[in-house]
Amino acid sequence: MSRPTIRDFHDDDLDGVVRLYEDAAHGSSRPVYALSEVIASCREDHAVVAVDGELIVGAAVGRAAHAQGWIVFFALAEDAAGTELGAGLLDKLEHRMAPLGLGKLSILVPEDADRLEGLTANGFEVRNHLRYLERQMPVQRRELDLLAEVGGRILPRNLWTRVSGMRHEKELLEERLVTPLSRPDLAERFGVVPPSAVMLFGPPGTGKTTFARAVASRLDWPFVELFPSRLSDTPGGLAAALRASFEVVGHLEHAVVFIDEVEEIASRRGGIPPSPTQGVTNELLKLVADFGENSGRLLICATNFVRALDSAFLRHGRFDYVIPIGLPDPEARQAIWRRYMPASVVDSIDIGALVAASDGFTPADIEYAARKASQEALARALRSGNDPAPGDELTTEDYLAALAGTRATVSAGTVAEFLEDITTIARL
Ligand SMILES: Nc1ncnc2c1ncn2[C@@H]1O[C@H](COP(=O)(O)OP(=O)(O)OP(=O)(O)O)[C@@H](O)[C@H]1O
Ligand SMILES: [Mg+2]
Image 1 (cartoon, rainbow, N blue to C red):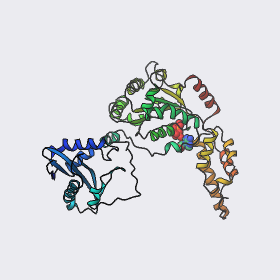
Image 2: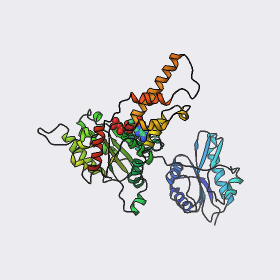
Image 3: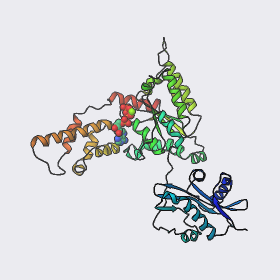
Image 4: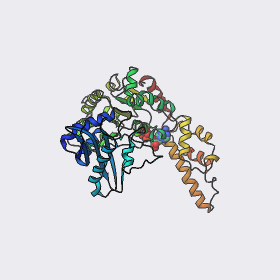
C-alpha cells in the first residue's frame, strides 16, 4: 500500500465515506451518529479524508456547536496504517476547525474500541464515569409544520402514571392499545392486529379525555385533538375541514387523534328532513374506515352518550374497541383524594372514610370537594385568627362536610344506563 494522502472532503468522496461508515456499522456497536447526520456534516460542517489512489481509507468528520466540537465520525479502513494515519486525519480536522475557536473537541467511541491510541496520541483523554444515553424524539423535523397545522403536540411523558387507580381500564388499554401499537412485531407474532380506532364511553367527567391523553403520552406519539366546533367555522364547512385534518395527520408517522363529544357529529342519522349534521356523519364514517388502512396512528373518540351514536359507527370494522370508562374505583378515589390533599395532613386523615363516602363521585367531583374543603378550612383559620399547627389544617370532617355539599355529577339513572350500555354496546 502506498502512503495515503490526507485532504479536505470533496463531494465525490461520499461513496467512500459511506462505505467506511457501513463497515464500522457492521462492527460490534452501531455508530452514535446516523449516516444521514454524518453525510450532512461531510457536506455542511468539516470533513477530511485519507485517500490511497482512488480509495478512501479513512475519514474524520466534525461539527461544532458553540465552543464545543464533536467528531461525528472517525474511521480507518481495516487495512489502513493505524495510529499515524489516524493522527494525521485528526490533525487535519483540528486544523480545519481551529478558526472556530473551540474550547473542546469530543468523540464518543464504542466501549470496546481498540484503537484509542490514535486518539490519545493526539491529546484526547479518556473521560471515565460517563455513560451515553439517547432518546428517540417522537416527532421528526419534517413533521413539525404538519403538526402545527392541526394543532398537535407532544404531551409530557408521565401522564399514564398520573392516572390513579382504574387498574381494570388501564390494563385493558395497555393490552388492547398500547402494547400492539408500540410493539407491532410482538402483536404480529400473536396474530393481533394493532387497533386504528377506538371509542371510549362513559358518564361525564370520568376520565375519557384523561385516558386519551395518557395513551398518547404512553406511546410517545403526538396528540392531535380535533374540535368539531372550531372546525365548523372554516370555509367549506365541517366535513371538508375534518377531511383536511385527517389528510394532514396521514402524513405524520405516528399520531393519536382525539375527538371528544363525538356524538355531536356522529349522532343517529335519519329523519325527514335529514339533520344538518348528516353529511358530517357520513364523512366521519368514511374517514374512520380509511384511517384503519394505515398503521402507526390511532383515532380515539369519546362520548357521554354512546347510545345516541349512529349504529354504523358501532358496527364491527369501524372501531376496533368500544371501551367503557366508568366511575373511579376505590383505589382511584383514594389516589385522587390524596392528590388534592396537602402533604402535611395526609397522615392524619381517615382516607378510607372519604373513599367510602365518595362512591359514585367522579374524579372531577372529588377534586371539587377537596378544593372546597381546603378553601373552607383556610377561611376558617383566617376568621379565627389562629394559625393551626402543621398537620391540623384540615380534618376528615372538613372533607366529609365538603363532600356532603357536593352534588354527584352522575345520577343513579345515568349509572344504570351506563351499566346497560356496557352489556349491550361495549366491545372489548
Ligand atoms: N384516574 C384518575 N386519576 C386522577 N385524576 C383523574 C382520573 N380520571 C380523571 N381525573 C381528573 O378528573 C377530571 C375530569 O377528567 P376528564 O376531563 O378526563 O373526564 P372526561 O370523561 O373526559 O369528562 P367529559 O365527559 O366532561 O369530557 C380531570 O381533572 C382529570 O385530571
Ligand atoms: Mg372529556
